[in-house]
Image (cartoon, rainbow, N blue to C red; front, side, top):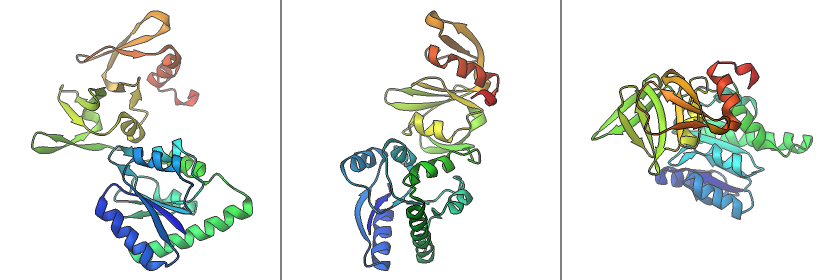
Length: 260
């Protein structure tokens, strides 16, 4: 069985490789991938393996971004230190979700589940395992992040979502601005923050901004039926809602989720 491991911690990836190949003589890890970028490149250039072991939070985003952009018809076992991605949902769908540190017992249990899933999939002629997996991840049961750890000088500061006014992509980095005008720079992407924030509280206004509902003061009409968002604190630059997104933005602002 050919296996790919997606893991941004070098030693963790190699330890998992050694354990897998030590437990199953017919298993061979053919690639260790350490980022979303390298993952997209690898899967676009190679055939899908028989099985993927994947961390979720990578240095440049979530591993889910790989599966959304590249069609991969093979099962995935997620291995992560975080328990916020609907563990029960994964287990009920026959694809496991393991919390680190991973034991040999849990690995063997996961392989047994994968074998069962493959037999069911072949029997039902179901070739879209990854699409079903992503639907589970993005279901209404998802638990959103409530706190982010940010670096500030020589300290690590916990920043709760109710302290955050907006996220701003600037100079190839994302800046998190608080309601007190404190600015923290992070290496994570806007796509990552969009995927882990509660969409009822934050809105992706455009490619540069994710804004909090609580900071919106008023809206101003622009040319070609666009809107400019006025915030209750100084704007670093104009926040423009495009014509194509105006109606969805207004529904979100009115909290009318039934029309989304």
